[in-house]
Length: 160
Image 1 (cartoon, helix red, strand yellow):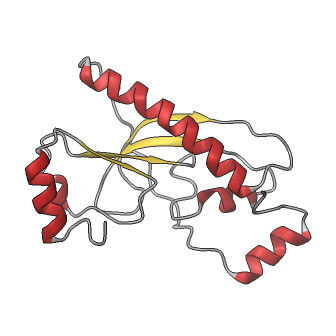
Image 2 (cartoon, one colour):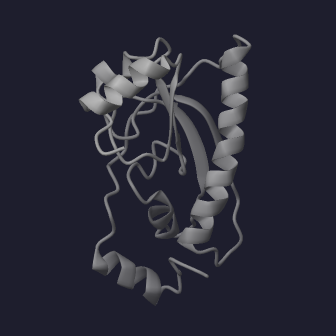
Image 3 (tube, one colour):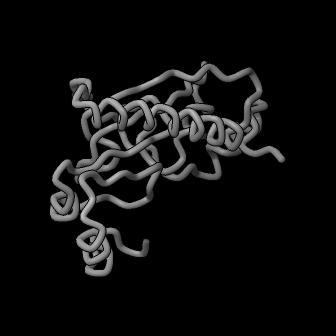
């Protein structure tokens, strides 16, 4: 999707007439007008324990911590990066030496399962109350210095 808030996307959403917009580790921010196109708004799956590691590469930021904490969050979409109320969250323990790319693959799989449980609960009218979490600082794309620091500490970012 070139522009989730553009006229082409809005027309596609209107044609589909969804009850709910669902995004999965998406790289764009939904405008309030876009979210209003679905009666139930929108939700997102993010591969981190929000409010920690808001941004495009959360597994790298988790890996940079002294004791990496990995997990996945399903949250309401809001017109701010990874800042909507949290609907469900699961910590996912990963073995020592897990690369950022392996963590992302595992968290995306766990996120799909968690999303399924959230959607089932919504469909059955038993949506868990969301909890607000004050957004922590945004974690941008890593700098070369950050990547070199990970390498010096033996933390690998990718695997085969």
